[in-house]
Length: 611
Image 1: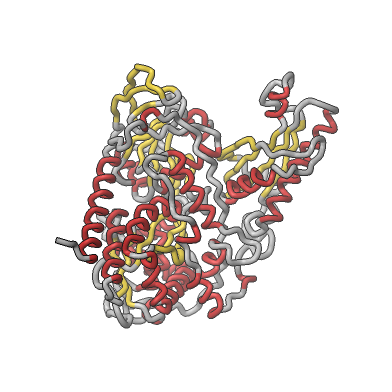
Image 2: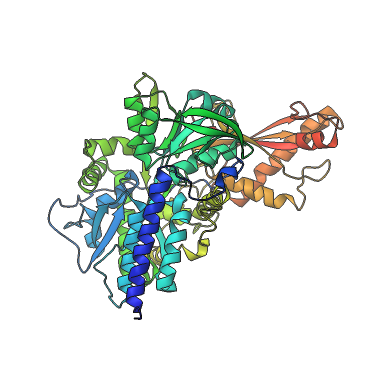
């Protein structure tokens, strides 16, 4: 008996769900799905080439109308959205007025009837989009099953969309999932937590054991930190490498925190360069990657783990991206644009008004129904809070932001002088997961197949925003000025430092043609950290006159500075980059050989936190 097309699609959905469900269960339990992975040597994660993001200015809004509490609003067919419990949605919450669009809300005024449902399981989000696309393909213009939209961490979109779009493509190429905009950012709540010694000296993390939900946003934070500091990652969560950072797989971000709190332990085979040594060792979790409320639990229940680095420093890494089915979005562009306009206006309201933030926090609890939380919980950790942990040590917790229209234009490189921030985010972390887990994630969809800025472009024409109101238009407005004493010297906490082999013409401060590729990598890597200062240190070998070498090292460092400022002026305003010259005084290798001298001819990049 032949199976009809609809039956084939139904079978695909079931298989998709079973495969993803089984994968999540086994990887969460630490089961190695791929034979031979244990023999993969620990490696340095590729450098996370991400741009910075400083955000759009917001003019104060007078006479904000609070959305109603109970009365249903909105017109037309219901639009369904699955979302994580995440404070980056605050603008959306205010715009909608409740779990369902309320009377008088921004969403109603823009002609959209939206239902928000918490869903912490990304697999179920994928299944919801597949079910929606399937019904749409059967001729149902406004599907009643599945979901129209989901929102996830943008740095994890490559992996999320790889399997999803492969399944959707079998329904039809017009049914792929695409990103249409963003609602906000994580700005501190997602973090890599561990011993203070790791923060003070990154090399001290060698042999460390971290619990986390692997190959996702919080794991990405640790990957970028390792890459920035030239350290190795052990991608096999069933072995232990004393020369790398090691992982214990968690089921989710809450479980990651609990494994640190309970001191989870197990015995593993020891490996060296990917090969078993024959030795076994008992390992115990001494760090975690998690997000609010996971970081709050770590601090209150155990303490002792500091924030080594977070999305406060890597401020461009984790946008809250909005994903929908391409065909429906194109057929309902008025609804998509109306929804985005409501969200962006809601973001402006939350930034401008404390009353709007409080109302958005109340709505957040109505939507999320988080046990033990209330509106004040969401408000406090949206702003970010410094609290004492169980050991009495102050620690930063929470921290998110909302996006407005200007933020989206900057993020997608739609304003003159701005880098395409999101493309760098998407491709960088897509490359990292493929590099670290080539058997599990062989590839990911190309950027131009998963992002559609048509709706933002249409709004841009319709609203005609004044670009002078976008922060960063005038150099120096996008970042705090250095403190007196000059060149960011008051911002001394070094997050990372790494040597870059940028090729210069012999005895000169001009670049060779081969330097362009490395300079582009450097630019993307530095652009991720919008809330940081950058120090460029120039170094030479000992050939020639010492005074001349000092001047040459300074000139070369300035050449790198000018390159960055010229290629991405909005992300590198005046005052963000400091230059220092060391000439031949700080060698990292012996000058007695050409190989050693080549290592000494270098540019060292330091990323410093703003204190």
